[in-house]
Image (tube, rainbow, N blue to C red; front, top):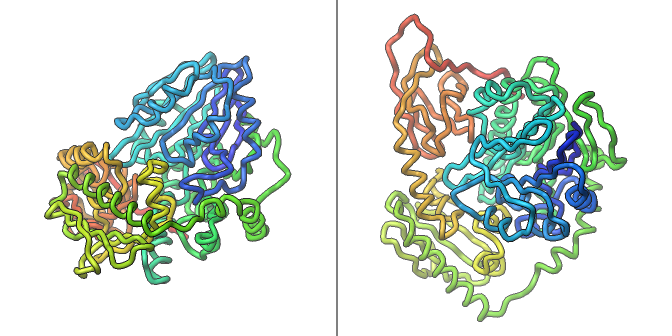
Length: 534
């Protein structure tokens, strides 16, 4: 088996009889309205990937894990002319990927349920699908030539890894995201020290999730992929050089893993786009000459930004007063339509204020209790959520050039909240498309209806808790305990204070933890403190 790294979460996996192209993100315009650019730059690999997909001989597959544009690149895929290959996509409730590829004109489209196995001549391809609320993702395994590659990219499968390994057997090469892919805290207005503290906590939590997965899988090699993007928009360029944020590099991850895990047989690899790994030897069959290192990183980013200047010049334009007014009215209508479909609106205890930078003094106030969006001159409450953005940027959402989630990931907005507590319904209101709003609400209800309980041990005590996380239903029996009292969700690393009834400090949700009487037998799901962290 040969694995060619395409950059970010992209790979070409070749066995003797089959070829699988995974998440090729190659467009020179990047993703999320050009806010994210591939790091290192990989645009030059587009001809290679087209050739691999278009060349007959081996059975060929294109796999797209989910809708995020740093994985699903319609601009590049449109340049592939000969499409006699099979497309593999996860079967989500939202059918966007299936609908797009139904019109793509390929050999066939296979929409895979969780655990769906696609046979190839020398093995199989298997998809693992995860869908909770607004979080839709999948992972892929290729087994062939007697070897196995598991790529979970951004997919939160950490609570399922024990079962996957038990069912699938040894995994030779493993890859998983280790960097941030969310707009918190990047878009939020925090004091520098608060921003750094939140970022560091999120970073170490992500590292810990990778470490625990490696403990379970024990692969021969781990490929650091789905790492940080490059932020080349002049307004965002500073993000590349922040001392602490949620976008660490592979060097920082490897330093953590080397201290966190005992010396073992797993090799940590950071390939450059175009490098080819021979899975048998775990040596690179070929490597590209250009390497991005901590020493040349700053110079590399400045040169990269200069090459991409035209992309951001094209984005800029001044809107007429009438255009701003039209976007303001359309945004009010859009928010009202969302609110009309949000039947969990009474759960939101604060209003949302939305301001366009070109229209100060005309804030849109979303009153969740009254289910009404109206215009006000200023913020009226201390307890509130706010979003500020430009009419030009949000106008692209209203024109359906971006989804709401793409817009949030573009980082072209500023958010604040008081109190600083995660509000899942409000969060979903911002990020969910209108047509998905009812399903979003049903997903929350479905998660809350899971009442199965289990037992964990922490700080010398035994606690009965709700087994499934109230956030998105992760199995907490696969979680772990930190500081002798905090049960950590393996999927999104929420912390539940067992000594305080299992309440999560970030949002107030609870596992309804109860202390059990002492007894000699072991708990059903023992959890232990992790190894010392950096």
